[in-house]
Length: 58
Figure 1 (cartoon, rainbow, N blue to C red):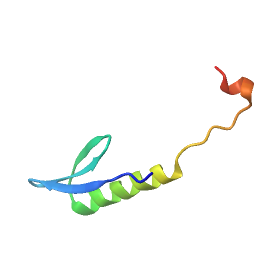
Figure 2 (figure 1 turned 30 degrees about the vertical axis):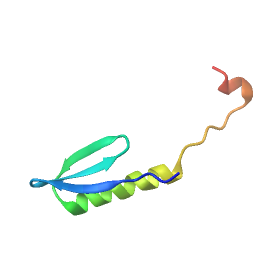
Figure 3 (figure 1 turned 90 degrees about the vertical axis):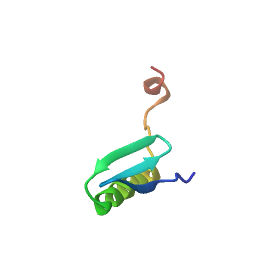
Figure 4 (figure 1 turned 45 degrees about the vertical axis):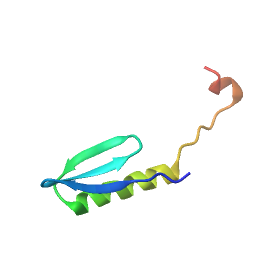
């Protein structure tokens, strides 16, 4: 599932907008784009739980 991430400027600051909310302010567009790229990488990586049935049933 793709997550829409936007980089926007508001006044002198930059923000990253996601479905989870607004992150910032950041000092530059490049800083905001770098943060957006990290969010996309983290979303693509996802997460995984490796355990036996007994360990996972807490």
